[in-house]
Length: 263
Image (cartoon, rainbow, N blue to C red; front, side, top):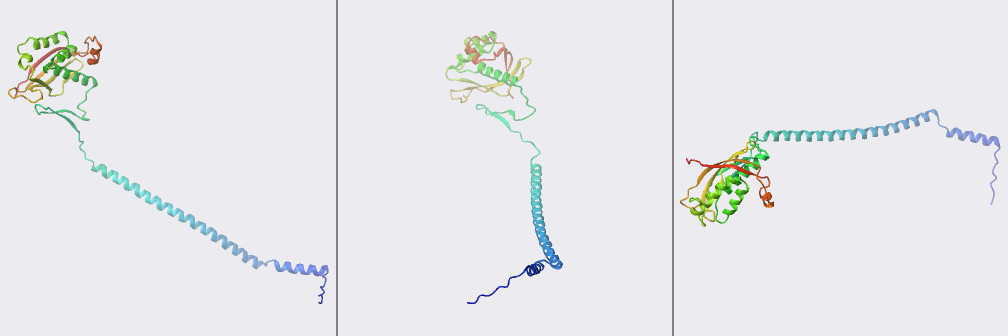
């Protein structure tokens, strides 16, 4: 084997080789210009891509706004159309009451009718007056004593005594004419007319003679009446039962009944 003898470079030769390699590594002005141009093109491409993305997002956003606006306009148009389709005439329901004996239909009230404005007091007064008339004019052999007690609890002694004498002493008493097998049914035909400030009211009602099942008996015509009543709330309540049955102290001070003419 032969060994190759390497020539040892001196300092000057090393410096020449280094300068030569350095010059080869350095870019010329033209090469640097071309490299800078390539960088500029690359950066421009990146910027253009980003601009395209932003533009696309904005376009999609405006498309969404457009569809949303169309939906709002359509909903508004539908609401206006429904408003025009709504009937201009207001329909007001009425409460009607049908009497089981006479078959007569009476309008009790119109729901929401501004013309029917009843105060709480007038409602209470009308209820008390109607209930008093029913107790005063009805007759049932099994409950006549209770009717007398209810009238006594809701009237002055003179008003109560008038009823007691008619029931107990009069030859025309229902105890005599109707006895045990007939009932005097009383029905209110219209809403009582009440002046709460003056303590006066009128109640229109009818009387019908029925059997124990409520069926009208032939030969006894239905009659119509009107009661004129004055009242206050000063009845003397004495017992717990009095306060339970007449808590406000309703008190009839006068009572008159007139029969209405039949057409």
